[in-house]
Each structure stands twice: as C-alpha cells, then as structure tokens.
Length: 99
Image (cartoon, rainbow, N blue to C red; front, side, top):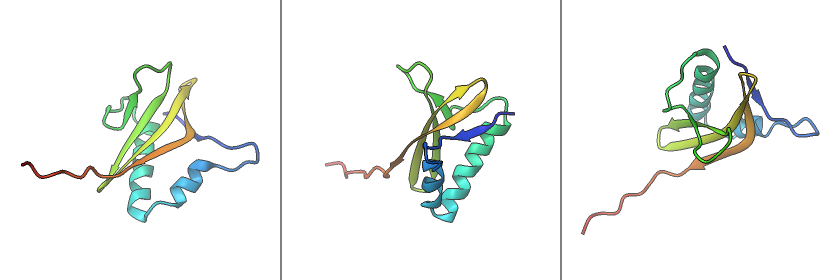
C-alpha cells in the first residue's frame, strides 16, 4: 500500500485541495476513486497511471469523469506517490463533420 501525499506551499496551503473543492460531486468521487486505486493496488493499469516519456520520473494520473478529463502530475519518492501542484483539465474534443 502506498501513501498519496499532496504538495503543500510554504504557507501550508494545498493547491490539490483547492482543485478538489472546485470539482462537481461526481468529478470529486471519480478523482478520489482513482487516487484510492493508486494507493491500494500493487499493480495499476496505465489507464490510470502512466510514466511520462522523456522525463526522469514524472507520472501522470489519468482521470476520465464523464466528458471531462483530468491529468494530475506527480512522482514517486521511496514508494510513496507525491502529487505535485499541477493538474490539467482537458475539454472534450469536438468532432468536425466529414466533408
């Protein structure tokens, strides 16, 4: 079992907590569910956790919640997943009709 540790600023604020508070209840539930998978399971599908190519050790947590996609960046330190203060919310792709 791993610990998921959120980044805190020097004044003790957690940007991750602020991000989580900004989500809808369904989005929040999905993010917490995926973080629990990372915390609890020994092997995690790259559907949820993937090492970013071209980086020394930055990992991306991938969360699809309905039409919204979230990417949380972090790293492992002595087996513990440390969530950085960066996240990306991707908008759904809009398909253009074929001509």
